[in-house]
Picture 1 (cartoon, rainbow, N blue to C red):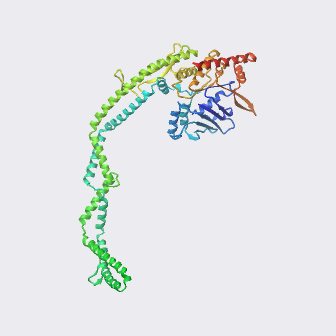
Picture 2: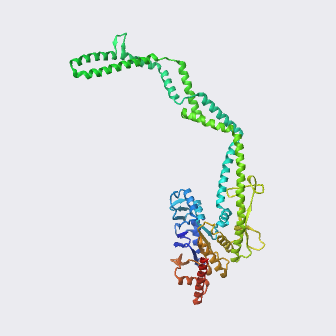
Length: 585
């Protein structure tokens, strides 16, 4: 529900704060006082078209802010929308929602939800979930055909079977996507299969081992640098083992002589024994190192053929990695396995296609069965809905009204199967193209709601629809601007009673000139204007005292004196009795 509305510098409103109740809120006042301006501000708040001309003269911007407490019915859709726009975390609770709309004198606008900037489209989506306004600009969901199927299905309690249909349609979409992929371009698929086959054969024929790249690189480096290896290893061996031509003693031989000397020293000086042991370790290590270096020299064998072989092998690996966008041999093997699996699927595509087409046929028949069940229930619910709405409109002095739920189907060779064997276009709601149509006058054909009536007739149509669909409609706040247009005082009480009855599932706000209607309000607001410092200002008083409310109703009746006061009291008393009777029933 709309808990609080704050308006600043909008048209002739300088600053205004209104707190609304959950029940029936009526707004009255003289013509031109600013009642409809309040409704205009609400329309702007929920995404209506902004106009810089609405900014109060002398101000740089207008600001409208609404504080909403989401109803249990509206909360799931609101929460989903807020999570989609990253305005609410999945585990957050949605207790209060604040919408803000700002219009600057230069024409620019800004929209915020709980202080976070959003686009006007998001604000409009939220607004459609929060408020249904029937005013001069007709922000009215019931006149939008796309909403009719949802309203009727809620009325007919079909949402559960529709959810099942949605699931089956989703399955069909997956089947058809796979069929399309397999049949889109046979030549392209054949070319794809050939490329996959070549990749598998090429990678398999190379027979690369997982760690082969490192081994190949190391061996190629050794062969490419064999001369330097031989020189360095030979010099190292000469230093360790000595040079026979110059009779130079090597390091190993010299360390062996050091061992002999230190061993003798240890016999003379036992404290030097550790040094002899250390020298022995060094001597043994030098001997082993000399042998190892000698092996390096002995094992060297330069082979141009082997080097060429290594270069070719590494070049092949480089080519395959580049061609198939792989970083290493393991990735190449993985690519080959994936290609092999896809190739197998392509080679078996005809069998897979047959299986998919059989699934498609079965699923289309299942969709047809569910759609027929839904259509049958809709037909019955539509007839019942039409009768109830006609009765409501008769109470509202629209005795010659006809109302129907028009349901049509479109033939489609690729559609689901109907009970008559024909194939029909369908979506997640079924096969029916559904719209509410009516005729307000004798001899007039049935036409879409938005084209039938305007002004008071349209308002009464909406009231009748809201009355009948109140349990199916999740919009928490309903706003009626001058619903009494063209309605006399006698029917005013009927309209008031019907509006008040909507508060069983909704918050209702109504701008009215009829005292008979205003008497049903649970909370009464009086709008008036005054001139101050050569400026016009709009004010709103809450008539929370009986005498003040009686005075306003008497003024609306145009009856002065005690007789007018008495008539106003009688209106209030009659409204209380009717409301109490409705509560009892």
